[in-house]
Image (cartoon, rainbow, N blue to C red):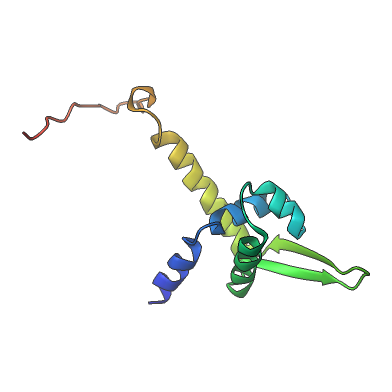
Length: 117
């Protein structure tokens, strides 16, 4: 059950783009992240950051200044997840192309599969 809870949390809209954007350059402030993630609302970003902080994927640091400065950074757990997402991105780039442009790996054979009528 715990696995499904974590999976569902990561699969929520905007969660993966938030992790990716934070992994590009950190620490980052709220408005920096909002600019990096095209189309995300302030409400959605705030909710995702809060959820990721609760899951200890990111850390939120508040500086006692006037006005207060808040920065977000990936934790060790978050850095590992960001690395996994990079590998997933490589997989998508490799396989999510029009069939005619997919380069064959050395020794790999591509066969036509007959259609069932």
